[in-house]
Image (tube, rainbow, N blue to C red; front, side, top):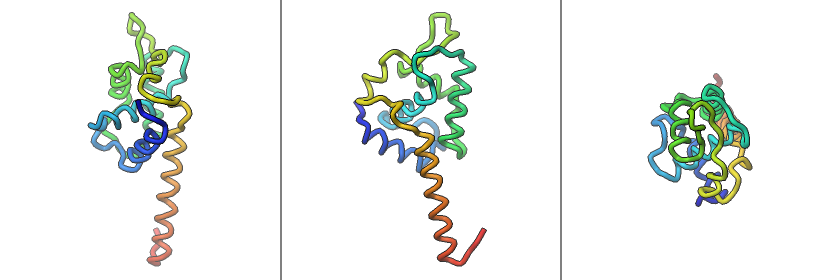
Length: 140
């Protein structure tokens, strides 16, 4: 079970390094990525495959704006395989698997906002770049 401090630490590391190589190989980092992706999906309601794909695509673009080798379809499949997202028997509707995330996380993943963390990291990068440019006398 992953606690909130470890979740946020691992998520921050993933945000810094990006997902250029796709889904992380470390199972805990995979779980953190999947848990963070769950925050894109409103809990307690059902969605079509197209809606889930749109939610995950928008989430990936907002949280990992750099080029990534994982797409929303692959991410949806990983969520289903991990038991965090379930399909109805007909395979047409999806919803967050009832309480399945509680078995893996010691807190509600919806308490974390990966979009805000990504925006904070981007702002910090801009601030450091501007400081470096001022110190070195360079400008863009």
